[in-house]
Image (cartoon, rainbow, N blue to C red; front, side, top):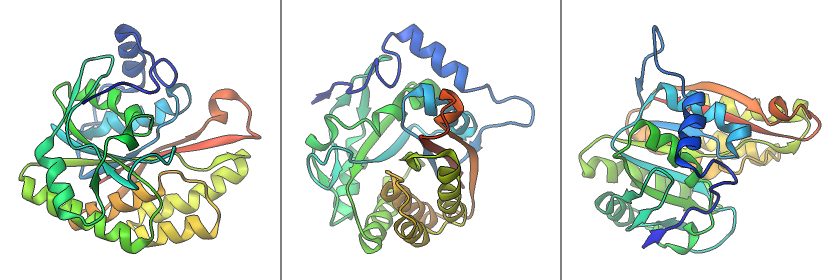
Length: 270
């Protein structure tokens, strides 16, 4: 199957030269003390590049991306299986097709009782797609496995996260896990920053169960909390000991309207 882009020319430029110019302006070259860091995972936002692109660019500027990656995002549309892996085919993007690594995809499905091969969940979903130009800019020959996830309790997240870690070990090569999420949606700048700080501290503490609890207790509209929690679980299983906040911003920093913002945070997990 060839998966066509769903949000090209909406969330990011569709012309190859325009996209390259946009991405290069957001990913500053690693110079001096800023060097690429080996990471087990990262967390990056998925809004239109005008709003969240600088936060995503800051993360991808410092993260050493492997040739194979897993990209997990929330299912905004509710289509398809609740925990859906696209297990074969290519994704058509402005810089060319990106192949799905079928071996890794099948290992993920084999290791988890929840993950299912399903294309339908991916057709309209933007949360994975928006990460790909950044990844492709850094690693043109990248192969990936896209996963979109519905709602889940901690036990389900734990099962999927540990299964991902097992699959990566069986795969036998380094794989960076990428969680795609935005933070608080459509609240004032003050409210968004206060709520987001609560979630940020749980990510920095590598506390996936605490993240789910704090998001629920404080009604934080973090759309990718499930991908983020699963990423934390998998990364810890693979030996992660630190999660560092690389950048935080809100849409108000671009629009100038601080009464009604969306928050964006980017992390590297090592």
